[in-house]
Amino acid sequence: MAKKKKTTTKTKKAQIDEILLDVADHIKESLEDAVTGHEIQKSELIVYAKAESIKDVLKFLRDDRECYFSQLVDVTAVDYPERVQRFDVVYNLLSMRQNMRIRVKISTDEHTPVPSVVSLFNAANWFEREVWDMYGVMFSGHPDLRRILTDYGFEGHPLRKEFPLTGFNEVRYDEQQGRVIYEPVQLQQDFRNFDAVSPWEGMTDVQLPGDEKAMKQNFGFRGIDKKEAENG
Image 1 (cartoon, rainbow, N blue to C red):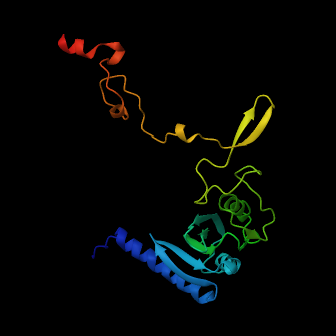
Image 2 (image 1 turned 30 degrees about the vertical axis):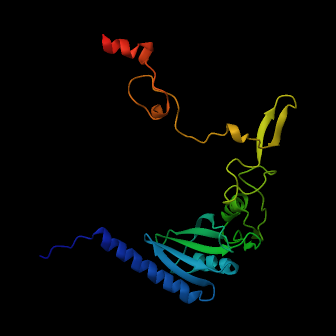
């Protein structure tokens, strides 16, 4: 009786990639004018689409019998400030029937709105609000496009590459006014120290991170004079 061949990890990966390529070809044939390309990264299918056609693409992926990507897991974005269309908006979908995931990417700039897909997936409501809040990508047709993670009076979009790490305003509670107030961030350059290594010396003779920066003293644990201890 012939022995069954063991399925290796490489063989499984090749099988998965082959299935994904078939799905990609099916999508390309069905949405020729809306899809600009595809690739497979680490056995995950990525489809590139035109921004103005995103609703048609996602509707097809949701309803087509060979796809059935019925769950919108997430919508996020990536900022590439050196590009004219600086933002990639990424849609992550899951097909429970096909046991498969797919990512759909579109590109846009900071002035051109992207069609909202809330009418297709209710979950897109908060996802798109988050992308607007963090990156400033606008979604046309969204029923309630307002900030969701930052305060309504927040200035700027925190995940853009040009946004300063310190932000523009700081929030604190004012004892005299008895309320929360907003003030411009004021940091004196002379007092800013971004050295993350601790300057403190360890309590024992064991060298700890940061000890190399401190002046080595003659006293060790509990104030015992090291020189006297060495001399007996």
